[in-house]
Image 1: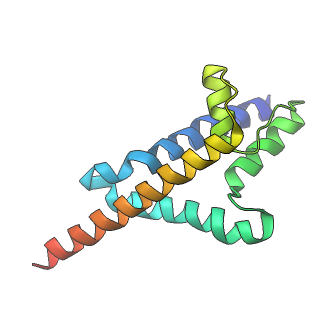
Image 2: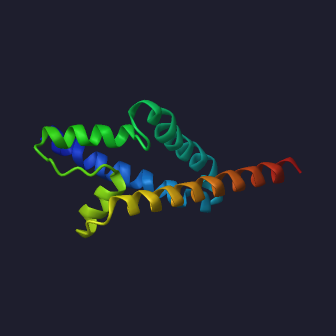
Length: 125
């Protein structure tokens, strides 16, 4: 029962976190928080990725550990691929999913930086 609760928690939390990383820059009130969450994601992917492999996400890692203890052996290499598979049943090419994920991430990160810098300069004036 405990593992099932953790599985649901990770599924909901990680999905909401991912969606926020994609769109959080849009809303002026969430831009600072967005810059923090997307920076944490970048640190996980690229800094921890030095030791654990490019794109490493500790949240995904913990979720996979929980699912493994539940007997699931259906994990993808990426959470986004897993999410698409779980929500739609579509087993897309993992390389395509990774490439699109990286493009969306970089665009969201750049937009977050742009709007946070712009807001900072507007407040100074």
